[in-house]
Image (cartoon, rainbow, N blue to C red; front, side, top):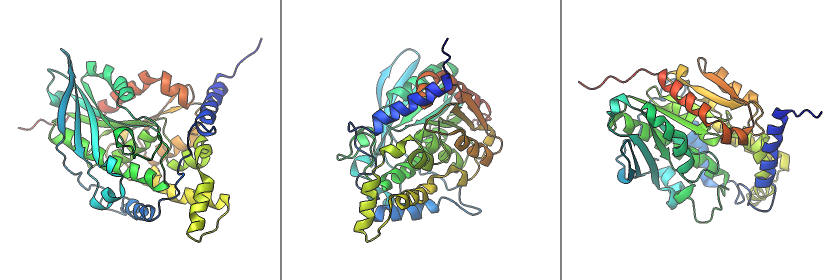
Length: 360
């Protein structure tokens, strides 16, 4: 009788999927155009400003007024799509590709329930998630529990993808930092809109993989308590691009050549170390502890080929009061099979928040 180590099988599936996606000629490599030059220098400076020594993390979000259109309505629910100008400052807007200047959201809400008795969660995109569909499927069943779903289309993704970019393969390292910074600003503005204009009684933010890293950053930097729900997420992009499977999909030689053009000669190992230094800016353990860490629930996989266990535990350690839940599987299988556990975490995270007092 042959016994199969199921955990190892999940781990191997992740590596087979990763090899197919990132080590074949079917797809271009990440960062094939290099580091991003002056854009990278600008972003390094701006992201360092996100780490206040004492005060400053309560910087208010920019207020937005999305323009809405109704996609469909049923007896119990309504789906709308909205657009608004990205809430990045002018320096960042000039660095973003023109295609990414307009943000798009989908907004799925229950009908005939007052917003002050409804919660809403903003769902952020994982790597390769260019459409609203998967996240609407994740949030849709929560309508029965009076939880609305708002889905943000990431910069560099979907209709916001630059013309020269193929799929999800960002052209420059600076694009990864730009994507993250713009996503944080836009999501904070959406949460502010849900609170001040939408009148929702509770709000939250969730995301899978890369989207979970961004969700953690938003939960950390938002000035009011929100349920923060990172799923299958590392504590830093270093884990994905320098240690995990995505390192096989990174254009290391192109990055070395870009440095050589700038009169900097490095070995490949030195190039990888420079990448670690740059991406250390995405280390969420350096971010402030969220206003209500008890409403932070990480969902991680036991045999994740992309995200090692220690990465998840580092975040829990940095944010005392947060919770880690484990699902059995790898990165790919958990993404496909454990939506019920993700929904359960959303419900439980929101339940740990107080309902907002309705205005008099």
